[in-house]
Image (cartoon, rainbow, N blue to C red; front, side):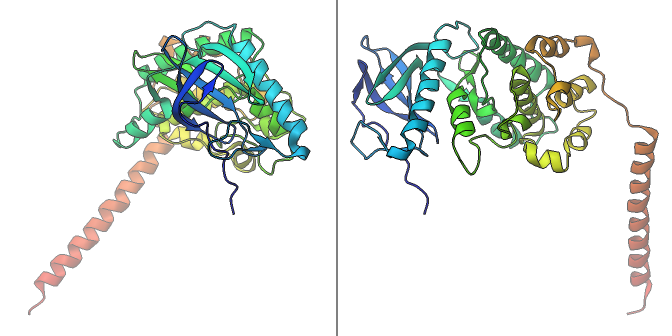
Length: 337
């Protein structure tokens, strides 16, 4: 049986002077609510509530944590609190704004601007279902990630890492801003310190070093995820997760199919970002920004001689089949009845 998720706070609950309206989202690590501040303005409140460590009965405010999980719960709580404090110091249109953070009910709450819009993941699914050769136009991809990288660069300058960049955590607002949301520092702490069967990562977007306890992480770790997000915008689906790629890497083959649809430069950028070796990736957001801004590099590769020959051979096989089938049909028609 799967473990029952902790119940969200009841509507109309008051925490830190904010009135909870309803649950907006919930995951394995916490719950996000729509709430009203004392002035009646809408805000989003994220509550630290890891489902693997805590339970809560419907209608209650306090989470319950087993004694043997208390130390790990408090370690994650401390990281979550420090993340809120660090984000509150960042003011950038492409980074979620943290307005307040506080301890109450034996947990921590992070108060943020309430954003109207949809996640990049929602846009990818909608665009993919139209079944066109391009999920997104290249100009759209470059413009979108120019915004995202501007925000991520500020985050890195504040000595922070996001550690959970994926299309679901890139929010596109109704006024056309791309905003990084739902940072994963506390989640990363629990994954490293806790004896979880599976790390709390999103398959396809987590860099290989995130699966190893002894590996060092840095800007290159978030940059891997950026590459994976661009890949998803091109293909409509996430790439294979890192452990599968280490066994058998199909990224280059998958991207090769997009030659002529997207420029060589964009394909090369994705391969660069998604290098399995951290040292082979861009080491800073600035280096990646510089490469993505190379407008004059948008070449579209023509097929090689070998590829043209292969296509001609395939066409000859199809024509031969048609000829044989046509001959059989004529022969059958010529037989006396």
